[in-house]
Image 1 (cartoon, helix red, strand yellow):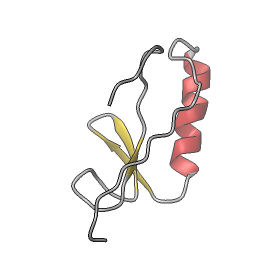
Image 2: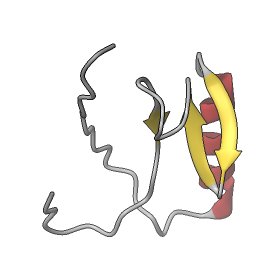
Image 3: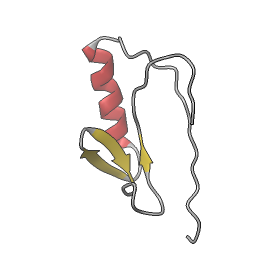
Length: 67
């Protein structure tokens, strides 16, 4: 891959959900193809930020999002 591109996808999962729900989300993450584990507490798939192909997930507060 000669060009690094970015794609963002937002899911409407509330940050204040109970631990039981977040444990379920973590279990789903680990079953997804390309799972690499947690790197500095951030879930990763396929690679890391310095690689051409990677996916990571994060929890952000609701509201406006700026690039």
